[in-house]
Image (cartoon, rainbow, N blue to C red; front, side, top):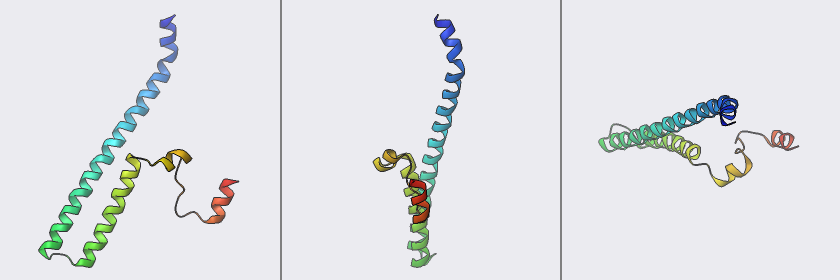
Length: 103
C-alpha cells in the first residue's frame, strides 16, 4: 500500500521540491543583492567624505539605494498587512481601478 502511495505522490513531491528550490534560490539572490547595496552605500559615504561627489548627488544615490533595500526587506520579511490581504496594493493604482477591483 505504501509503495502505491509513493508512486502516486511522486509527481506532487517533485513539483513541491522544485518550488522549494526556486524559493530558496530567490531568497539567496535577494540576500546577495542586499549585501551589494550595503557595500554601495559604504562606497557612497566614502566618496562623499573624500569630496568626489556633492551632497546632492549623495542624497539622490542614498535615497535610491535605501528604497531598494526597503523593497528587498519587505520581500524577505513581509509585514502582517501584506500577509493578511494576500498582496499589498500597488501604489500607482487609481481610485477607480481599486474600486473596480474590489467589486
